[in-house]
Every structure is written in C-alpha cells, then in structure tokens.
Image (cartoon, rainbow, N blue to C red; front, side, top):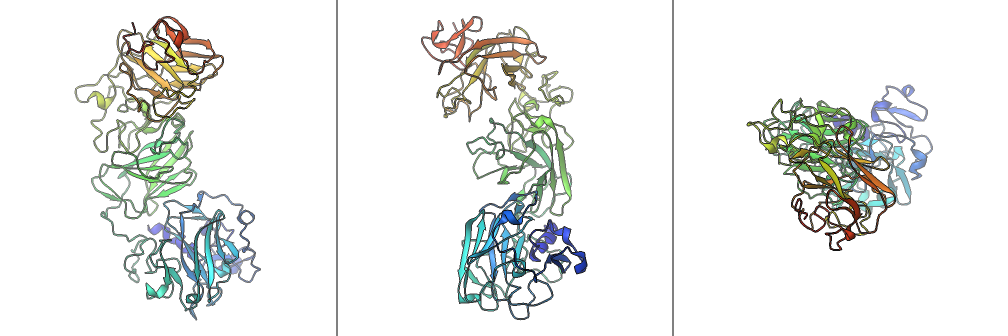
Length: 632
C-alpha cells in the first residue's frame, strides 16, 4: 500500500483544518500559502501565531466542504497515542522548531476499510475541543493533531482526552503524572481501543511515534519488526499473509454489480431489504494464483472507495463481494464477504466501478447504464470473462431467471464451478439495450452444454391464448400469502398467472401492468402447460414456511403495488399485445379475486367461488386446493 504513504504523511504533518485534500496546499515559501497559513515542510499549515479559533467543537461552523467519503462511524477511528510532554529538543511536528507546547499531539488512526471524513470527529481535552479535519482519511492512515492545529493544551500532570464522533464519546483516556515523562502514552496493543495505555518506551525504544505504529512501521503492521532504514520497499502493510502474489490487470474481473436492490433483493442476507445496504460489487480471481488483495480498492464514480484489509488472500477461481453493509453471516458459496458499511452509493441509472491495486493502477473498470435500474443486478453474460458484456441478471443464460447471485456464479453454483459457457449461436445471452426485457431468440441447448448451464429448455414465447390472470390478492389484511414467515400487506399482494397453452412457453418480456402504469416484467422463465406462476409484491424467502405448491414455476417478486380501490390489471406479451385483463375491482380484506370456473370464468370473491368451500385465497393452487392443473 505504498500509495497511501503521501496521504498518511499529510495527516502526520497536520493538514490544516479547512483545507481540502492534502495535495492542494503544497508550497515552497510562505508566499505560496493563503492568508493565515505558513509553509511547513512543503505544506501550507495554519499559522500558529494566529488566535486559536479552532477550539470550538462546532463542526458545522468550521466546515462547509463536499467530500467524496462518508462521515466517520463510531468504530472507524482509534485514538492510539497522546503526547503531553514532548522530549526536550524534539521537533515532533516538523515545523523547524522544537517546542514543548506546539509539539503536543493526539494521534487518530482509521481502522476501517473505507475512506472516512473527519468533519464529524472531535478531540476533547478536559472541557475544550477541536475538530479533527476537513478531509477524507484513508484506511490505515493516521491523523496527528498538534497543538499548532488547535489541539487544546495537554498538561504534563494529567488530563482527560476523548474521541468524539457525531458528538458522542467513543473512546476516552484519563492520564496522570505518567504523562510528564518526556515520552508519549500509547495503547499497549496498538489500534485496540480496549487495550491499556502505557508509556511509549515500555513497548518501543523511541519516545514517540507520531503517524506510525510504536515499532515504527506504517499502520496496521504494529506487531512486526521496525522497518529497515533506507529500505524504500517497506510497504504500509507488512502483515504476514498466506499469499504474496499481487494482482495485475486481467487477474481480477468485476463480475456482478447490484446498484438497485429495490424492495425485493436481500443481497447481504441480513433479513431486511435496503436500497443502500444491499448494493454490492462482486469480483472474481481469474488468474491461476492465490492473490494478495492488501490495498486493492473498489471505487465508484463519485469517489467512494473500499479498501481490502491487509492480508486478504483470494484463491484462484474464487470470488469476493463487497456489500453496502455487511455484518457477517449468510451463504455466499464460499466467497469472501466484506462491507463498505457506509453509503457507497452506486447510481441506479449509471455509474463507473473501478478496481485498482495498492499503487493505484487500474485492474478492471466497468461503466454501466440504465439496465441496472431494474431491481436486479447486472452481470457478465459469461461468468468471469472480462471480454463478456454485462446483461441484466434475469437475462443471463445460466441464471434461470434469478435476480442476483452475490458471491456465486449466475447459476447459483459456487465459484469456480460455473459449468460450461453458453454455446455460441444458441442465442441464450441477449444484451438488453432498450431498458425492457427481451425475448431470447432460441433456448435450445446443444449436446455440449446442459440445460442448467444455458438456462431452461423451453417452447415459444407466450402469445395470445397462452396465459390468463387467474387470481389476484389486493389486500392481504395480515395474511402471509407469500409464506415467507412475515405478514406484510404490500409484500403479500400477489397476481397468479396460469398457462392455458398446449406446451411449455417462455415468459421473458411478458408484463403485468396495473391501472397507474406500474409494471412487472417476467425474466427468462419457462412455464409448463397448465401450470401457474405467482408474482408477489416482495418478501423474504418465499414459501419458506410451507412448500411451493406443485405445478408452480419459481415465484417472483416485484409485482406493482396494488390499490385496494378501483384496481385493474393487464397482461401483455413481450411485444405489448394484450393477453388477458383483470377488470376494475375493489379489495375485500383478506379475500382474493379468482376466476370461477378456474382460468375461464369471471372474477368472483374467492370465498364465493363454486369449488372454494369458503376458502379466502389459494395462491399457487386451484380454488379447491388442488395443485395445477387438476382443478376439477
């Protein structure tokens, strides 16, 4: 992670509060700096002779800047070192003058995997505070705030020093006379905020280590040996890893991106749907070696950046996935899972995702467009193929119509066992350039690829006379119609579509459209003759409480929001021709509308249907409770 050294150095040299990124205030003389600043070791820093206006604690008054990083969270920073009694003659802050006052400092380290803004971070000494800075601090970089940067005076005989994030105290150390011993106080276990505080020379031969670990290494290598003097190849992360091969262009492929989770994709498997937390980027190691990802970054067009932790090894053929938020758990097929744990902010309508190595060299870059704005991911048409185009996940040949596959192949299999690539000429992979789903031109697998690998073997596209709207649930009224274990009056709304065709038909591109224009478009999905498919408003794991009824295709999520009054629906084929309709009806709480007789009759309330026996609903089943197509 050599690329972080200049940034960490800027932090060490106390980037002035109110300046921008550290590279913007370089100087050779004081004349190169704006009013109120002087040139210190090549950087414009606040003039220590000015009245200290920084000791206010009012971040809103100090900073009116836009940063391409999220504000620091409560666990993102660690207060690692405090120097109240600088050794005599030591010019700690590098301003050319040794001072037992100006060289006092407090050191903060970013222990997260993302850049964090310091504008919401304050250091409190007894009853006075200073804001940490107005810039983004990269992972493993240190911000050293000196007295000349507004840090309240640290008395040798004792003081209480606290780290505050958003005004809340996250770490505090109160020291006594041990602070006046010509050395700093530091965490016995570096970067561990639960560790005890000790005098610096108890764990190091040096009296202080502003901006580095106590052993002199760059963060986070605080347990290893000190760097060899004059060795320019010592990296910022000397943590011993089980691998050593660094990735180069072509080794890592951005394979899948979910920018628009909608309300139907619990990508990080935490049990909730969230349009930000469930975003993800998946990369795959397509090289023949296990790769060391230390310092490798994933960034988006707005500048937000995630950095892989030191020592991260990714085996050949395996994947790693970064979610907007990840707190552990889930089953991602053995993939490495991480969390940005902030607002990464992938734009639904289009964005650029870039993977770079620790030196800032691009390994892979992808720019996507409006196809990502469809409650599903976009993925390589052929898993792991850097030359392959991106398509909507539902249209990927091996996806079986699923909306995403974080950490896994599009088929749901674990990497690297994705199966044979689609056979050229089968037409199963279709790049959607219109923003709407498209109909595959051919879905027949050849003898060199199985149906599981190229998608379902199916018949022609659905046409007039092939499909009917058979049952509509407008108002669940607390009933768990989607059988995910959680009643929800929006997610449990549903539309049941039944095939009246003589053979299997392809549903890709078929739409269910409501009165207000909201629509659900079927993905690449095969429906057998006489069988049904359910489309729910949303939900968790559908039919996890009871089994999916026999005779049903895979249930779908994302039905348009259904009104309780004057709702009507239209079923359209991929070309926009009307296949069937549900006439305008009002909801009766907890009772669906169903055709009587099944598939051919008019819509009646379910409990009044001839064969229903008073039942209020039968999602995925005939009104009499039988499996399709045995409704008589």
